Image 1 (cartoon, one colour):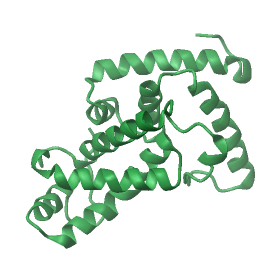
Image 2 (cartoon, helix red, strand yellow; image 1 turned 90 degrees about the vertical axis):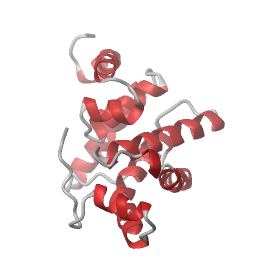
Image 3 (spheres, helix red, strand yellow; image 1 turned 45 degrees about the vertical axis):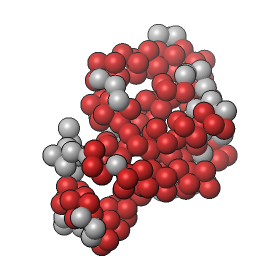
Image 4 (cartoon, one colour; image 1 turned 180 degrees about the vertical axis):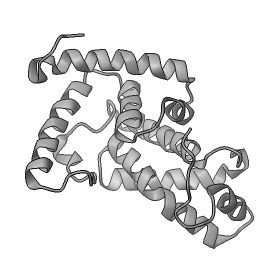
Length: 194
Protein backbone atom coordinates (compact mmCIF):
# COMPACT_ATOMS: atom_id res chain seq x y z
CA UNK A 1 0.00 0.00 0.00
CA UNK A 2 1.28 3.51 -0.76
CA UNK A 3 2.38 5.50 2.25
CA UNK A 4 0.40 8.71 2.52
CA UNK A 5 2.54 11.78 3.03
CA UNK A 6 0.42 14.49 4.60
CA UNK A 7 0.57 17.74 2.64
CA UNK A 8 0.13 19.88 5.75
CA UNK A 9 2.54 18.26 8.20
CA UNK A 10 0.25 16.28 10.48
CA UNK A 11 -0.76 12.76 9.49
CA UNK A 12 -4.37 11.73 9.00
CA UNK A 13 -4.09 9.60 12.14
CA UNK A 14 -2.95 12.60 14.21
CA UNK A 15 -5.64 14.85 12.77
CA UNK A 16 -8.38 12.25 13.19
CA UNK A 17 -7.36 11.69 16.82
CA UNK A 18 -7.56 15.44 17.46
CA UNK A 19 -10.84 15.74 15.55
CA UNK A 20 -12.35 12.90 17.59
CA UNK A 21 -11.51 14.90 20.69
CA UNK A 22 -13.27 18.02 19.44
CA UNK A 23 -10.45 19.90 17.69
CA UNK A 24 -12.26 21.86 14.99
CA UNK A 25 -9.03 22.96 13.31
CA UNK A 26 -8.03 19.30 12.82
CA UNK A 27 -11.48 18.47 11.43
CA UNK A 28 -11.25 21.36 8.93
CA UNK A 29 -7.78 20.17 7.85
CA UNK A 30 -9.07 16.65 7.25
CA UNK A 31 -11.96 17.98 5.19
CA UNK A 32 -9.68 20.25 3.12
CA UNK A 33 -7.21 17.42 2.57
CA UNK A 34 -9.77 14.82 1.47
CA UNK A 35 -12.51 16.86 -0.23
CA UNK A 36 -10.95 16.74 -3.73
CA UNK A 37 -10.69 12.94 -3.71
CA UNK A 38 -14.15 12.43 -2.17
CA UNK A 39 -15.76 14.83 -4.63
CA UNK A 40 -13.93 13.25 -7.60
CA UNK A 41 -15.22 9.80 -6.63
CA UNK A 42 -18.76 11.13 -6.10
CA UNK A 43 -18.65 13.02 -9.41
CA UNK A 44 -17.47 9.94 -11.28
CA UNK A 45 -20.28 7.87 -9.76
CA UNK A 46 -23.11 10.43 -9.77
CA UNK A 47 -22.00 13.04 -12.27
CA UNK A 48 -20.50 16.40 -11.35
CA UNK A 49 -22.59 19.09 -9.75
CA UNK A 50 -25.06 19.37 -6.91
CA UNK A 51 -25.62 15.62 -6.46
CA UNK A 52 -21.86 14.97 -6.09
CA UNK A 53 -21.51 17.95 -3.75
CA UNK A 54 -24.35 16.67 -1.58
CA UNK A 55 -22.82 13.18 -1.54
CA UNK A 56 -19.45 14.67 -0.54
CA UNK A 57 -21.03 16.51 2.38
CA UNK A 58 -22.97 13.41 3.39
CA UNK A 59 -19.78 11.33 3.31
CA UNK A 60 -18.05 13.75 5.68
CA UNK A 61 -21.04 13.78 8.03
CA UNK A 62 -21.01 9.98 8.08
CA UNK A 63 -17.26 10.02 8.61
CA UNK A 64 -17.66 12.32 11.61
CA UNK A 65 -20.41 10.14 13.08
CA UNK A 66 -18.37 6.97 12.50
CA UNK A 67 -15.01 8.10 13.88
CA UNK A 68 -15.30 5.50 16.63
CA UNK A 69 -15.10 2.74 14.01
CA UNK A 70 -11.99 4.18 12.32
CA UNK A 71 -8.73 2.35 13.08
CA UNK A 72 -6.06 5.10 13.17
CA UNK A 73 -3.33 2.53 12.42
CA UNK A 74 -4.80 2.18 8.91
CA UNK A 75 -4.91 4.84 6.16
CA UNK A 76 -7.88 7.18 6.36
CA UNK A 77 -8.29 7.49 2.55
CA UNK A 78 -9.66 3.99 1.83
CA UNK A 79 -11.94 4.14 4.87
CA UNK A 80 -13.35 7.48 3.74
CA UNK A 81 -13.53 6.15 0.16
CA UNK A 82 -15.67 3.23 1.38
CA UNK A 83 -18.02 5.66 3.10
CA UNK A 84 -18.24 7.76 -0.08
CA UNK A 85 -18.74 4.69 -2.27
CA UNK A 86 -21.65 3.48 -0.14
CA UNK A 87 -23.21 6.96 0.06
CA UNK A 88 -23.11 7.15 -3.74
CA UNK A 89 -24.48 3.63 -4.23
CA UNK A 90 -27.36 4.46 -1.91
CA UNK A 91 -28.09 7.65 -3.83
CA UNK A 92 -27.94 5.79 -7.16
CA UNK A 93 -30.38 3.19 -5.85
CA UNK A 94 -32.80 5.85 -4.62
CA UNK A 95 -32.63 7.75 -7.90
CA UNK A 96 -32.82 4.60 -10.00
CA UNK A 97 -29.47 5.37 -11.66
CA UNK A 98 -27.58 2.56 -13.31
CA UNK A 99 -24.11 3.46 -12.15
CA UNK A 100 -21.11 5.61 -12.92
CA UNK A 101 -21.93 8.91 -14.58
CA UNK A 102 -21.55 8.25 -18.28
CA UNK A 103 -22.65 11.44 -19.99
CA UNK A 104 -19.41 12.72 -21.57
CA UNK A 105 -20.80 16.26 -21.66
CA UNK A 106 -21.14 16.21 -17.87
CA UNK A 107 -17.79 14.54 -17.31
CA UNK A 108 -15.87 17.37 -19.01
CA UNK A 109 -16.29 19.31 -15.76
CA UNK A 110 -14.48 16.68 -13.68
CA UNK A 111 -10.99 18.13 -13.49
CA UNK A 112 -8.18 16.27 -15.23
CA UNK A 113 -4.93 18.19 -15.13
CA UNK A 114 -2.77 15.73 -17.13
CA UNK A 115 -3.27 17.53 -20.46
CA UNK A 116 -2.22 21.03 -21.39
CA UNK A 117 -2.92 21.64 -25.10
CA UNK A 118 -6.36 21.98 -26.66
CA UNK A 119 -5.62 19.03 -28.96
CA UNK A 120 -4.69 16.79 -26.02
CA UNK A 121 -7.82 17.81 -24.12
CA UNK A 122 -10.05 17.18 -27.16
CA UNK A 123 -8.46 13.80 -27.94
CA UNK A 124 -8.71 12.81 -24.28
CA UNK A 125 -12.39 13.74 -24.13
CA UNK A 126 -13.20 11.84 -27.32
CA UNK A 127 -11.39 8.72 -26.10
CA UNK A 128 -12.99 9.16 -22.69
CA UNK A 129 -16.46 9.36 -24.23
CA UNK A 130 -15.86 6.08 -26.08
CA UNK A 131 -14.62 4.39 -22.92
CA UNK A 132 -17.62 5.67 -20.95
CA UNK A 133 -19.96 4.27 -23.59
CA UNK A 134 -18.17 0.91 -23.37
CA UNK A 135 -18.42 1.02 -19.57
CA UNK A 136 -22.21 1.00 -19.91
CA UNK A 137 -21.84 -2.71 -20.64
CA UNK A 138 -20.49 -3.28 -17.12
CA UNK A 139 -22.53 -3.64 -13.94
CA UNK A 140 -22.66 -0.57 -11.69
CA UNK A 141 -20.33 -2.24 -9.21
CA UNK A 142 -17.79 -3.19 -11.87
CA UNK A 143 -17.89 0.36 -13.27
CA UNK A 144 -17.10 1.60 -9.77
CA UNK A 145 -14.19 -0.83 -9.48
CA UNK A 146 -12.77 0.27 -12.84
CA UNK A 147 -13.16 3.91 -11.83
CA UNK A 148 -11.40 3.46 -8.51
CA UNK A 149 -8.56 1.39 -9.98
CA UNK A 150 -7.84 3.21 -13.22
CA UNK A 151 -9.23 6.72 -12.83
CA UNK A 152 -8.45 7.25 -9.16
CA UNK A 153 -5.21 5.26 -9.33
CA UNK A 154 -5.89 3.05 -6.32
CA UNK A 155 -4.12 -0.28 -5.89
CA UNK A 156 -6.16 -3.48 -5.91
CA UNK A 157 -5.81 -3.61 -2.12
CA UNK A 158 -7.04 -0.02 -1.74
CA UNK A 159 -9.98 -0.69 -4.06
CA UNK A 160 -10.84 -3.75 -1.99
CA UNK A 161 -10.69 -1.77 1.24
CA UNK A 162 -12.84 0.95 -0.30
CA UNK A 163 -15.62 -1.34 -1.52
CA UNK A 164 -15.33 -4.07 1.10
CA UNK A 165 -14.00 -6.87 -1.13
CA UNK A 166 -10.86 -8.94 -0.81
CA UNK A 167 -8.01 -8.28 -3.23
CA UNK A 168 -8.52 -11.48 -5.22
CA UNK A 169 -12.19 -10.70 -5.83
CA UNK A 170 -11.23 -7.21 -6.99
CA UNK A 171 -8.61 -8.64 -9.36
CA UNK A 172 -11.04 -11.20 -10.79
CA UNK A 173 -13.78 -8.62 -11.35
CA UNK A 174 -11.33 -6.14 -12.89
CA UNK A 175 -10.00 -8.85 -15.21
CA UNK A 176 -13.53 -9.67 -16.40
CA UNK A 177 -14.37 -5.97 -16.76
CA UNK A 178 -11.25 -5.37 -18.88
CA UNK A 179 -12.25 -8.25 -21.18
CA UNK A 180 -15.70 -6.70 -21.67
CA UNK A 181 -14.14 -3.28 -22.33
CA UNK A 182 -11.56 -4.68 -24.80
CA UNK A 183 -14.34 -6.42 -26.72
CA UNK A 184 -16.48 -3.27 -26.76
CA UNK A 185 -13.59 -1.01 -27.82
CA UNK A 186 -11.96 -3.36 -30.35
CA UNK A 187 -13.94 -1.98 -33.35
CA UNK A 188 -12.81 1.55 -32.50
CA UNK A 189 -9.23 1.04 -31.34
CA UNK A 190 -8.47 -2.17 -33.22
CA UNK A 191 -7.18 -5.41 -31.80
CA UNK A 192 -8.80 -8.67 -30.90
CA UNK A 193 -11.98 -9.13 -28.95
CA UNK A 194 -10.04 -10.69 -26.01
